[in-house]
Amino acid sequence: MAAPDKGKALFADSDGQFRRKASAFRDFISADPSSKFPAEKDRYVLYIHIGCPWAHRTNIVRSLKGLEDTIQLVVLDASEQPGRGWHFSGERGFEKDPLYGFKWLSELYKKADASYEGRYLVPTLWDKKKETIVSNESSEIIRMFYSEFDAFLPEHLRESSKGEKGLFPTQLHTEIEAMNEWVYDKINNGVYKTGFASSQEAYEEHVHPIFKSLDRLESHLLEKNTPYLFGDFITEADIRLYTTLIRFDVAYFTIFRCNLKMIRYEYPQLHEWLRRLYWDESEKTNGGAFKKTVDFQSYRVGYAKATSLPVVPVGPKPDILPL
Ligand SMILES: N[C@@H](CCC(=O)N[C@@H](CS)C(=O)NCC(=O)O)C(=O)O
Image (cartoon, rainbow, N blue to C red; front, top):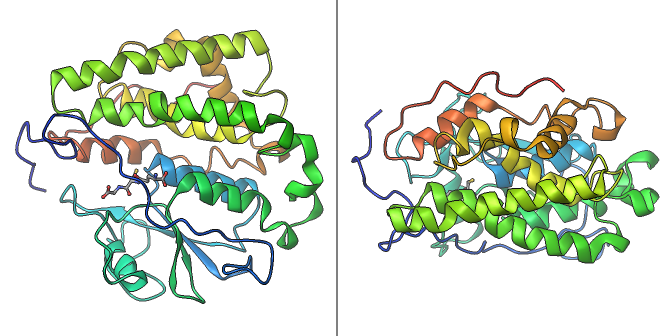
């Protein structure tokens, strides 16, 4: 594998800042059979990369909701040439796209819209009937998965039977949305703004707010004194924070230089919260939705590949501490 030029900005703009572009495909699957994209079994396909935290959200929810037999999963690999996008290398079992035999995710985007000029992102939710992309925005895909597929699920997994104990319950909408906003900006995307910064100034601008926000979450958990962010039940807020924190010590601390503190040593509440989710293989996580969707080595390799010096750090070890 050829190493990219040392010091070259792979993802940052010319001012050193990494700016995430908005997702382009924003349709919705609905439980209503007369809608444009009605919920159906074996109609939709979720394309992901295991290392991607945004795709990880959708993969967790697919498992948590027991949608494995309803929504097909296709796993892509990262290209050896950073910036060339996602493809099928055979590393994870897929040598080519199972639907069309494509080698690159870009070909699927071009099939959906020949004039598409944006980035080829995971997650991508594909409709086999209309042969197009429904959505490539994780925050919206997870919400479709919560509630629109209830008809295909046993009673205990339906969002409609959960009421106040659901993943996005009505009484918590405002609080969850408020937390999503700053957690997204300062933490989920904050680690990218830090890790992909190509100037000292941009790096320092974004690294401090990450830790201020982690401190805020640590206090939130201490005050609440509940197993999850909003009480005794897992909500969307937990899922969205989890995908960043499970990568934190092994990839963001080391490779993205988010290195003022580690979750395992300096954030006892968050560390316990993280391990509680990871190690749970009970009915609460539908048999381990948080653990089985994690692959620490792919985080190390993937983020190293995305930097200008693709050397994979070996630590910290173990990947995660026991509960
Ligand atoms: N807003 C999107 C972000 C998705 C995203 O940025 N995915 C990254 C992987 S972690 C990607 O596919 N990047 C490829 C590229 O930018 O070319 C979401 O949440 O779904």
